[in-house]
Amino acid sequence: MEQLEKVEKLRQRANVSYEEAKEALEASAWDLLDAMVYLEKQGKVKPPSQESYTTNCDEQTQYVDVKEKVQEQEEEASRKTCQKLGHLFRIFIRKTRDNAFCVSRKGEEILRVPVIAMLILLLFFWQFLIPAAVIALFFDCRYSFKGKDDLEGMNRAMEKAGEFADKVKDEYEKL
Image 1 (cartoon, helix red, strand yellow):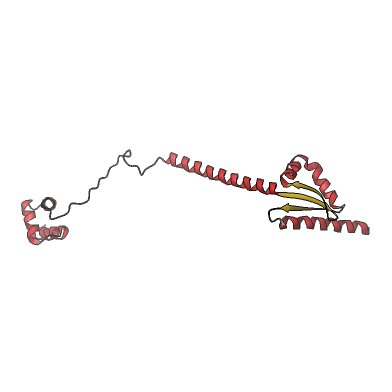
Image 2 (cartoon, one colour):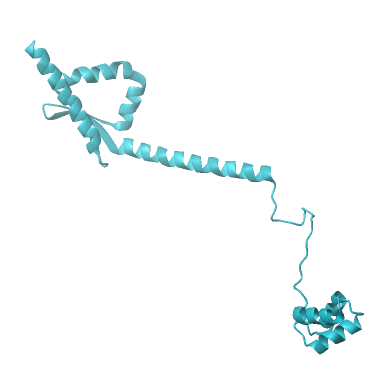
């Protein structure tokens, strides 16, 4: 590279005049790198910001152990699942505690049991309670749910069961 090209290159990179670039190159035996250092020492060029690079893993905090990260994510997912299950369980307990299963006959309420108690009874005595509930439908017993929550959907299903029992009873009487 000719001297003029070196002066031009240094002038552009260091943002100095031709005279300063030539002086720096002459002082550094026409070596571009040495000329840049010369200009930095004179304060005519800002030195680059301090940066360092290393391949040593111990000093770099941005890298984490993959096994630890996976384990941490699994524990967090497990905690979230447990929290969701706990929340659903609390809702279930509240709804079964605050609402009641009612049995009525000819408009008069015969029995009112908290839903939680009814579920526990069904859990242990389902072989007797389910047939008894179906038979009671044919003796004009009706089922409903009452309580704090909106139970219209459940009550409509109970009404349909009562209507079906009435239809079956009417068909039997026609025979």
